[in-house]
Length: 144
Image: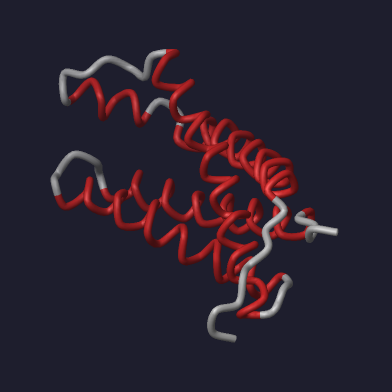
């Protein structure tokens, strides 16, 4: 299939990706009671303030970008790996590994974040990206 043109429904990528991003945002908010104020304590121990509203807005925007990115990558590879949940899970897992896992554990290696808090956040992130990827892939529609 060399030279084959990939047709992507950009409107569907954006719509289903934004919903996937919303799920990531909801997941992140729902994690707050699990970690309590541990993150604020880590920041305080580094003489840093708690997350500002601007920082939270930034992370919310990143969540939407992540949702759209996962659906976009799914739209690119679905024909190569067969459209469906297996491909959505594969895309989500690879995305999680390259974005959440590597960066989160870099913070542990740097000594910035404690291991326990990082493991919780990283595993939680895997769950949220898998959910977002599966839902986004289910909602993605081909160009008609």
